[in-house]
Each structure stands twice: as C-alpha cells, then as structure tokens.
Image 1 (cartoon, rainbow, N blue to C red):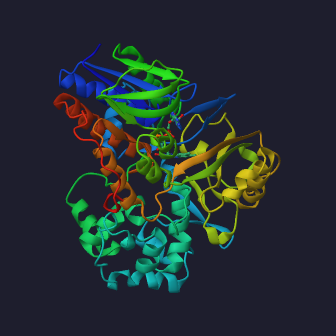
Image 2 (image 1 turned 90 degrees about the vertical axis):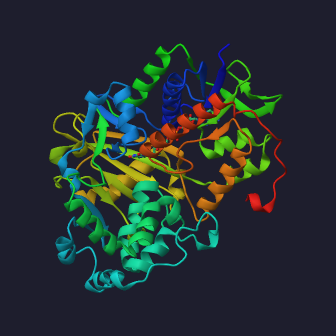
Image 3 (image 1 turned 120 degrees about the vertical axis):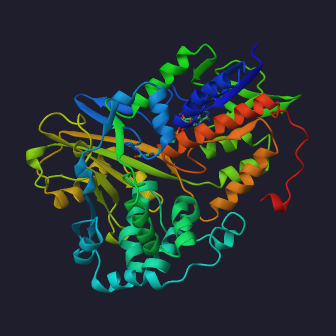
Length: 490
Ligand SMILES: Cc1cc2nc3c(=O)[nH]c(=O)nc-3n(C[C@H](O)[C@H](O)[C@H](O)COP(=O)(O)OP(=O)(O)OC[C@H]3O[C@@H](n4cnc5c(N)ncnc54)[C@H](O)[C@@H]3O)c2cc1C
C-alpha cells in the first residue's frame, strides 16, 4: 500500500488536471501516493469532448480557452501538446450584437463606440456620466454581508445606465454563463469588476489608469487570445488521460456509480458500485455541485444543502453546417449574441469555421447556435428537429442563408453551467468553512470559483499543492468531530 491514498471523484478537466498536478506535487515532496479517479461516464473529460461528424469537427462543450491563464498553459506544456495549440483567427475581433433586429458590430475603440449604432446618443451620454458616479462604499463585502451582493445587471445600470446593461451586459452574460444578468452576482461572476471599482473608483478611471500602465510595459494586455487544439478540446483530455494512464500511481475508473462519501475510523470511504472499496486519506470531489450534494448528504446534510443551492442553467448547442455560397454574410467574425430584449429563443451563434481551421470541410461553414440558458429553459422541451427549425428560422434572415443545412446536430446539456446567483460568495464561504472542518475532504471544479476551463486549471494547481501539503503534514486526519451546524456557519 502507498503511504497516501487519494480519491478524486469525477474526471472532467477539473478532476484530471488536479490528478496530474497532485502527482507532480507528490514527486516534489517525495510523497508515496496513489490517486484513483472515479468517473461516472464511460469516458473522462466531462464537457470537453470533440465529435467527428464525417468531415465536420464539433465541440460538445467549450469551444476554446483564453491564453491569459498560465496554469492552463503550464498543463498544456507538461502534457506535451504545446505544438498542437491552435490560435483563433484574427477575424474573431469582430463580434456582433442583435440590436433592434439588425446585426451591429461591437466597436473595439472608444472612437468607434461614439459613432456606432449600438446605442442611442442618450445612452452614450449616460455611459460617459460613469466618470461622475462615486464608488460604492460597501464593495468587496459580498461574502460576509450577502445583502451587499449586487447583480451584474444592477451594477451595469448603476454605473453605465440601463440601456448599456440591456444591450451589452445582458448578452455577454448569456454568452459566457448561459446566464441571466438579472440573477448573477457581480462579485462571483465578474470579481474583477468589483476590484476595478474598488481600486480606481470606476470603470473608465480604471481603463485610463490601466492603459497608462500598459504603455510602460511590453505585454499585450490581460484579455488573452482564444485558443484550442488541432483535434479540438478533446486533445487536452486525451493528453491528460494518456499521461495519467502511463503513471503506475494513477488509476482511472470509468462507469463508477458513486452513492456516498463517508468517514470512519480515521479514513475516508466511497460507497457505490463499479469500483473497489478502499480506505482513502483524502477525497477530492470534482463533480458538479448538484452531484457532490447527493454524495455528501449522509456525511453532512448542511453542506449538501448549500451545494444543492447552486443552480445550473440548461443549454442546447445546435450545430449547423452550410455551403458557404448559400450564406450571404461573409461570417468574418466570432459570432453574434442576442440581448433578451430582442425576444428571440437563441442566445447567440458562433461562426466556428471562421474561428479555427479544420472545423468544416472546404467550401463549407459551421455555425454553432446556443439556445436555452437560465432565462429561457423552456426551449429544452423541444424535440431536436424543432430546435434545428428554431435556429434556422432565427438565423436565416440575419445571415441571409438559403436552402437546407448540410449538417444539423443537437447537443443537449440539461445542466450546462453553474449559475453564480446573488448570494454565491456567502454560500461559497459557508461551503468551504464546512469542508475545512472535515480535513481530507476537498471540493473543486466549475461550480465554485470560476466556470471556465482556465479557472478549473488554475484551481487544480493551487488545490493539488494544498492537498500535497496536507498529506505531507498528516493534516488529513480529522482532529475533532464537526459540531452541528449553527447559523454562523451559514
Ligand atoms: C455548451 C458549453 C460551452 C462552454 N464553453 C466554454 C468555453 O468556450 N470556454 C471555457 O473556458 N469554458 C466553457 N464552458 C465551461 C466548461 O465546460 C467548464 O469550464 C469545464 O468543462 C468544467 O470542468 P469540470 O471538470 O468542472 O466539469 P465538467 O466538465 O462538467 O465535468 C464534470 C465531470 O463529473 C462527472 N460526474 C458527474 N456526476 C458524477 C458522479 N455522480 N460521480 C462521478 N462523476 C460524476 C461528469 O461525468 C463529468 O465527467 C462551456 C460549457 C458548456 C456546457
């Protein structure tokens, strides 16, 4: 038996990256470790899956990731797939919004913004007034005083005006979270916005100060460039799995049906079927919060209750392929997003074959539409054919598409993306306080502190180091039994 035995529940990118980093951290501490990953599905990877549909290459979940997170790039490097990175085309600078039924390009410079048709003059004037709006006094307190937690929409209205919030923030939140700006917590979903207001007193003041700072540096700025891989996002998962399978200390089990997590006589146990029962020194739960909730119900009903409070938005991805000559629009851009006030069923569409090469056969275009989300979950009740017709009906007039699609494929995500709703920072604080009281139990993944692939990879690095430290120090042993929940814990 190894000195330290660790189970990782779930083999999405969060679980795989944590496993890979944990093995490295064990190496650097001379820890004799064994890591078992218990994945529910027949294959690991979670949302990161690339489907080959004849000559078309479709993404099940994420389309790519930004290259501004060093932890992801370090993982890519360690897995030996840097050479397979694919940079998105420069045309992705061009992004469009549906405004009053017409596609309008989002301006990328202040000058272009002033002359653009995106917002009427009164809304632009209101935006300019942002410079005069004082900083909120109770910023940065959302985890301790949930009543101060502002939604993304409230923040937009307060600082930049309602019209900006409706036309720009609302669709941005749909595009990133499949979410509803009127429900998501600014502090949880966009913590940087809170920091900028806190530090500089406002967004324009922050932009000016940061632009000045950048002038004195040579880097290209913080926003990053979208990347994927030849072979799509599956390349990252396949490389991580290959690395883990080569390591005799790692054991990957697919088809594991996990019932519950228990702690008995100084060891952790995972109950269920499809895997061997054994005692563990630590359990890292990288499953989505709703799944973790069920697994932890018997161990800690209060923790399970908090996890169950994190909602997930459903989403349908509708991939449509066309002969390029049947589309009037040149598709030179990233795609389009649709504000709620336009009253459409689609959240938006990405022009996938314009973003990365190799996604569609020669002379064809691949468009990826998104429907559903937190604000429009009822479309998920439609049959696949109905979803395809809905996407075609909304896209045809916008892009000038003639004739039937050469490819139509619907991918359903009943619980696509965790929604960091108002109160999420306080909920997280309570969740992690309860975990901290159970040494050896850890939670990670996109349900908590960042929904992107980059956030999962960043968290995987810090968590792996923490777990290795705890194992090395013998801190995984439970010192005192957890007292029953008090109101302060929540
Ligand atoms: C349509 C869509 C588009 C997206 N686009 C982007 C994008 O462009 N860029 C980006 O950065 N992010 C994007 N995301 C988010 C991205 O998918 C997540 O960041 C990432 O997949 C989260 O990884 P994860 O490991 O936390 O969760 P998941 O990928 O959800 O993996 C969770 C794993 O847990 C397993 N599991 C579930 N229940 C159990 C159980 N009971 N027992 C054991 N295992 C279990 C699942 O089978 C799965 O393997 C998108 C998501 C969706 C749905």
